[in-house]
Amino acid sequence: MFLPTTLEEAKDRGWEELDVIIVSGDAYIDSYMFGPALVGRYLESKGYRVGILAQPDWRNLDDIKKLGKPNYFFAVTAGNLDSMVAHYTPQKRVRNFDTMSDDGIRKRPDRATIVYTNLIKRAFKGVPVALGGIEASLRRFSHYDYWDNKVRKSVLIDAKADILMYGMGEKSILEITKALERGENIKDLEIPGTVIKANKHKLEDIKERYRCVELPSHEEVVKDKVKYAEMHKRLMTMNNIIYQKVGSQYLIQFPPVYLTEKEMDEIYSLPFLRKAHPSYKFVPGLVPVQFSIVTHRGCFGSCSFCSILHHQGKVIQNRSEKNILKEVRKILEHEDFKGVIQDVGAPTANMYRMGCSKGLAHKCPKNCLYPEPCENLIINHKPLIKLYRKIRDIVGEDVKVYVRSGVRYDLIIYDKAYGDEYIKELSKYHVSGRLKVAPEHVSKKVCEAMQKPDGEKFKEFLYKYREIANKIKGVKEILPYWLIAHPNCSIKEMIELAEFIHKHNCYSKQVQVFTPTPMTLSTTMYHTGINPLTGEKVYVPYTYKEKKIQKAICLYREKENWEKALEGFKRVGYKGIIYKWIVNKLKSLK
Image 1 (cartoon, helix red, strand yellow):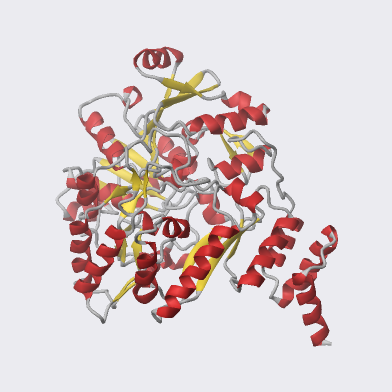
Image 2 (cartoon, one colour):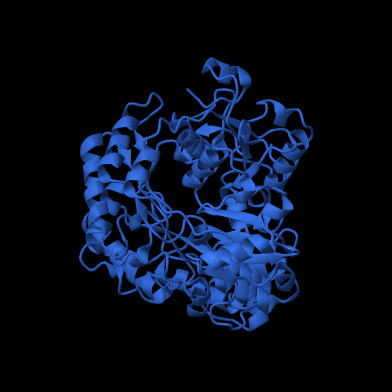
């Protein structure tokens, strides 16, 4: 049975009222891949009555009222994506399709977290509102907003909400619910994984009891880009209590929450239906993940452009092998299952059972993998190889099991004991078409800004993978993902990438223009022109014209890009191999 989306559905469960109402910018899909279902099912398992209000009409107050007033609070999320990322391309053009809406028709507002909260505050005066999801999580402090091209305040302040949950949120939302059930005031809570607003008296009380890190104030980071860069560097001290002054009040962030293996197993064993609510015709976002399996959370890669560090964190939180295999058996019995497990993975597929041998990743501000792996980092693919083999034993030869999450190729190179064996497993059994990897770039200068290994490491993996795949007659082609117009990437670095692609035969149309999203290191570089980790200035390609040229150079084989690519070559006086290739193609057409 789905969580109720109407009062009639609540009454079918024998519920006359709801304890918590989750308001979401996504359609309601009952799968752990989607936040509202995940936290909703978790609260339900603890005995609370939870309703889902999916994509209410923000143009009037009627929709926000249809589940009534909750006993404890509203929980608001923009959905699985920041609403601005969901609505606009990197060139700030409006997207005409929303994968998380019925029939792909857009139904959420821009800045959904703020809009939904304002509706609730108008309709239910005095009812607490807790924010969660990726939009709230990554906008919890002052942040550069690409779409407004300015530094905005924390969404907790802009939305006038009462508390913000960052990260995945299950334990935080449970503790908030328990506290309000006991009659506590939401403004007095001090719960791990949350951010609150406080006056100076409250802040001083907390500072007396805990070690705290102060960020530059909102007013400082608005005026001074050096201060903004300093703020980002201090934000990487994740294990401390962090606070920031905004006007006359303070934002206070309590340390993050990490789950034990037992807690992970409990959450992923909840009775998810793996279906969209029957009120919808078709929600496109369900299709690629309906029969995907999450093995763990977190990523210690800390790529500059990625939000995972400040959302799930860099501590790998694993499910047990037994629990994962139990889910595999359950999938085989699902009425909609058609013989393909779409993914066995996580933010980074091959970090299962890896991490800091001393258990200190959450306390250490250093990058675990860049420029070289930390001496305390466990890099071992053996547990994952074992898991894959056990899954294949259960499903048999007629069921395909794919790994479509991102694979961190440098981990494979660093794993001298089991790296080659992992390649064999992937190539022979778990790749559909081409193995997808994300080197992003090859230029040393750009990769340093990205905190990614450069082209030499990718070249080593490329040839190793092809050699092994060829020997075992596995899938031997690789599909690289390239990121262009990233800070420190000029036309010269794009030419370097194009030449690498040409020389090593790894052309790909999977090219993305860098989008500055809140709270990432790359976004700080984009806004300030400073790498906050080094204090050095970085080049930023701001203009749409240069971004188009960079994209054309990366996609140099496409006829429609030749004119733009040649324009870029002329700018820098380049007449190398890619220039000659295009000129020869043009000659052959005459």
